[in-house]
Image (cartoon, rainbow, N blue to C red; front, side, top):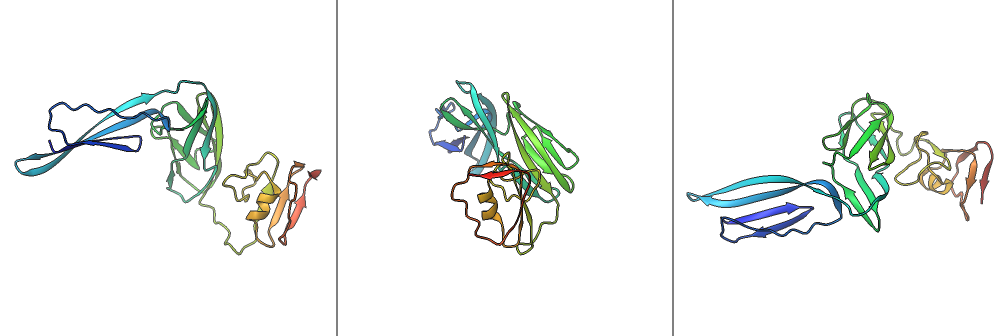
Length: 229
C-alpha cells in the first residue's frame, strides 16, 4: 500500500503506513450536519502498475441543541432554462451556525409553479425548466424559508430603464429590486441599485431610514401612506 487518503467535510487525511488495517481519527466539525459522505481513496502498486481504488460511506451528524433559525442563499436566482443550482442552506443551533448537507432527507421544498422550476430531493437542488417566475418554500426541522426564481426572461440591458420595488415586507440581501414579488426592504438599497431614470415603486409603510439620500434622477412613485423616519 502506497497511500490512503480520507476526504471528509472538506478536509483530507493521508497516511503512508504499510498495514492491512489502518485506523483514522477524523475531526467532526459543526460546519456541516446531517447526512454526509466519507470518501477513502487508496493508491498501491500491482505488478509495477499504479492502481487507485476508492470506497465511500455515509454518516449522519446530529446537533446537540434545538434549531433556532434556517435560511437559504442566495435569496433570488435569474436562470437560463436547463440550469441547475444548489442553494447554500444554513441553520442556527444554540450558539453555532452550520451548513446543512445536500444529502439530508430532512430538507424538503415546495415549488409554487413546478412547471418553471423543479426540486430534486436527492441532492436538494433546483432545475430551471421553462420561462417564467416562481418561488420555492424550503422546509427543514420545522423551519421554512422562501427563495425566488426568474427563468429565461429577457433582462434589461444595463442602460435600459427598469422598475424597482420597495416594501417593508421585502429583503435587501442579494436583491436588485426588479422583481415585484420580491421587493427590497429599504428605499436606500433600491436607490443604490437603480440607475438614473429608473422607476421606484414604494409601497405604503414606515421606513426607518435616517439620512436617506436620494442622489439620483429617479421617478419615485409613492403608494398609500409612506413615512420615512
